[in-house]
Image (cartoon, rainbow, N blue to C red; front, side):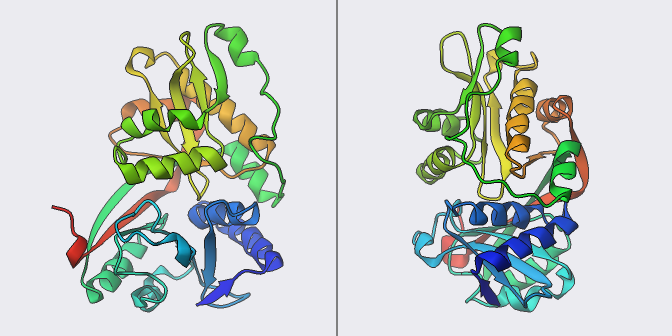
Length: 302
């Protein structure tokens, strides 16, 4: 595999990946953040250049110091020929199979190759899937291959349409001081490693919330290093009142203005979240979100 670290080549890759949306979204979103400051210190590997068949996004080596931290030890993969990816994935120089890690992609056909590569390295694999949701606005914007610089922190206050409709509720940037609140209510979190990860996401990536009458968040969403909007949650008292849908609509307006890629994954049985993303204008993509959580024999959880 070739390490792609030239800015012009990375921009060319980003534009090329746009032609494979939605199945390329995991790596497309990762390359976006790499091209805009690389806040998570990720790197890009391709099997060849410029005629690549496979792209792997992974953290730089200095990031992966904790063998148990699968929030950091995460790989995003896109392949034009998933059925031929096994030999690449087996390579311990490319995937550190000695660590607990997660592989994410939007191609179910990668699963067989990942399992075979994991088996050859004596690694246990757990697979999970979810629906992938995108918007027409996103597709229109990113088909144009535009690229705009700018940070969440530098952006002015959003318009006050939401506040006019709901005067006791205010749309705001999610403050890092609420990381613990997010962690306590994140199904995949509730531990110290997830808390560190959440703090980092809120600090360097777009994260938004609705502040209730008491001035504390009643609903929130964050973004991950692959531009996936997630960790969405609404306090039980305020559910089924359109609060999450309003938050998603307001946040996606900002993301569209800055031309930041965005998409959402929702579990099949999460009816409330599916309703919220539907009300916010998202539709289910033809491909699914997939995650393979991998455990070396000595790190398999009980």
